[in-house]
Each structure stands twice: as C-alpha cells, then as structure tokens.
Image 1 (spheres, rainbow, N blue to C red):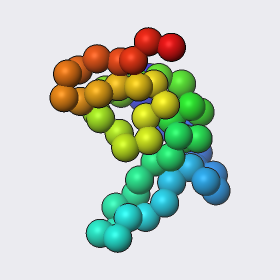
Image 2 (cartoon, one colour; image 1 turned 180 degrees about the vertical axis):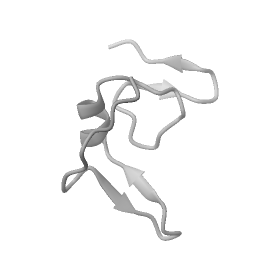
Image 3 (tube, rainbow, N blue to C red; image 1 turned 90 degrees about the vertical axis):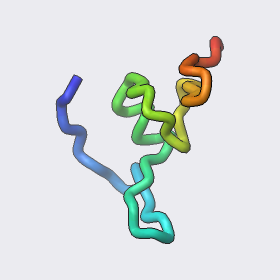
Length: 55
C-alpha cells in the first residue's frame, strides 16, 4: 500500500497556502481510501463520522 505512484499532470494542484492538494484523478489511480478526509475523495469518506458512502 505504501508504493509511490508517479505524479502526472492533473494529479494535484497547489492551494493558496502552497500545499499540494491531490485530485480525484490521483485518488482513483492510487486505488484505495486512506481515510484522511481528503478534499477530493472519490470513495465518499466523511471524516466527521468515519464512514464511506455506499455506491
């Protein structure tokens, strides 16, 4: 699970504060939810309740 995935264009953008923000594209390439409450999580994880939305 800790395998590094090479970054490509569209995998992230820089926030106004200079942080790297990973996009849905990157998360789908990674293939799993890290349960960190990522802004663009395609897996539906909600940090507040610790649950994923069912699809």
